[in-house]
Amino acid sequence: MKESSSKIDRRKFLERSAKVAVGSTLFASVTENNLVNASETKSNSKLPDFIIDSHIHCKGNDKWVEDMVRIYRSYNAMACVLTWIDDLEIMVDAIKSYPDVFIGYGRVDLDNQNAIREVEKFKKAGFVGMKFHSPQKNYDDSSYFQIYRLCEEYKMYMIFHTGISGRNITDKPNWMSSARMRPMYLDTLCRLFPRAKIQGAHLGNPWYEEAAEAARWNPNLFFDVTGSTLLKFIKLGRLERMSEVLWWSSNEGEKNPHTLKDGPSAWEHIVFGTDERPQGLPSNIERFSMMLDKNNVPPAIRKKMWGETMAKNLGIDPETHKFIE
Image (tube, rainbow, N blue to C red; front, side, top):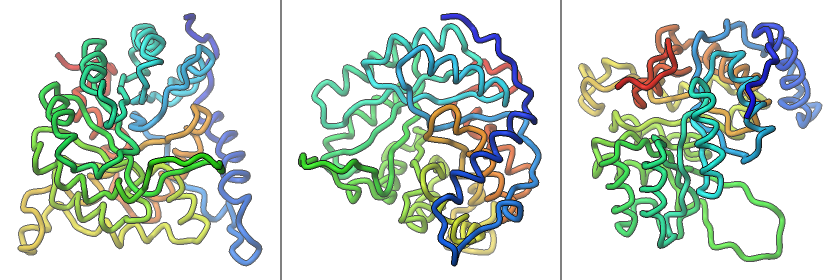
């Protein structure tokens, strides 16, 4: 696998890509009555100095790897790549070739009888996280606890899909329900596995308040806001609504007896992610920045959300992109 020689100026790349993404992707489906002026909604935030994309999927081919390296290096970004066992080899090769970009996460089916063995195989290959999706039982069913306990013992970060799940139009039955993946099930896991670091994908869309309240009582619980949420709120002109669910400050517990004392503020539970192709990074940066601006998130907390929180959770040095021994 050869390293891409293409070098892209970060600012020119963002300006060009953001115009296309914001102008075409975000607002193409908006009706005339809800038409949004892109020039009025575009973020004025400067580019973050360091990014960790906490949620992106391995596509299992060299072209995808080359695109990742070319685009993510231009933003000084790393990526937590969710990988099925069939793509283990190509991901191991990518991590070895480009350790400044790729962070290995495995992905297993919780109901597969080989799930434990696959977790062990990912750990042995140097992966530091695991992704779970589409369980046949609720996430906090005790039959899954052995898998979670192993991840906690291995210090493997765990990310769970929460909320609505996409599907294709098909006439084939599928044993899956978004109701099995409500964000409050992660509250159970955070209490049972307090040494684990746990992330819910998509802020539980549409159960945002449920996700936020679960995070409020669990300092080891984080959420990304990937998927349709920001697209939806931008379209409706409601980005400020995020502050309605992410409402508490870091010192809230000093005056409010019903909030975790000495816990992090609400926005410190949110981490950046894309859940898209590598080419989606610029538009995701733009949408995330717009959310931060509309909700007046302080600069120090923004840095945590862009990458510092994930770097701390995973033991990565933001300066060198290397794991701290």
